[in-house]
Image (tube, rainbow, N blue to C red; front, side):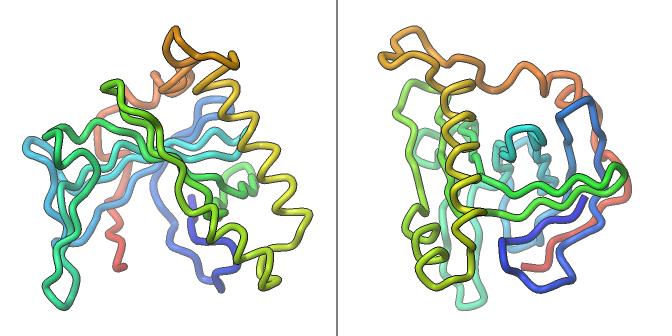
Length: 191
């Protein structure tokens, strides 16, 4: 598994250890020490990718992160003391069988599991990439169509979603979520 943002130069971050079950991939990487994990968790982040839809998602393992200037950024759910919300990324996935490349296409959604509303993020970055010509229109159009397919299949199948999520977290990840960690040699992100 290799990962990066759309338009990032090669080399991307990887190879990362992972496992595949049909159209679902799970991979892992460790966060550097500047990330404080949630109690009872490590800095090992497991990410799931639905290769057929082109989305990746994780329950971030970190409670806070400190940058080189000493500024602290809180993670998801700090106010609720949880660490259980999901962070979902729109991706461009290139599947070469034994090697998969996932490039972030900017659009994200935070999906809390405690009844709070989901929150869309970074649509402005998505628009900026199109406007500045760093993301071709064909990539953007394909990404938006797949994003809507993901939202409809997994978050809100009906126009009035009163009965909970359609399929979130997707049932298809269960076999890979149950695997013990680590999935292979631990690779630490340097960002």
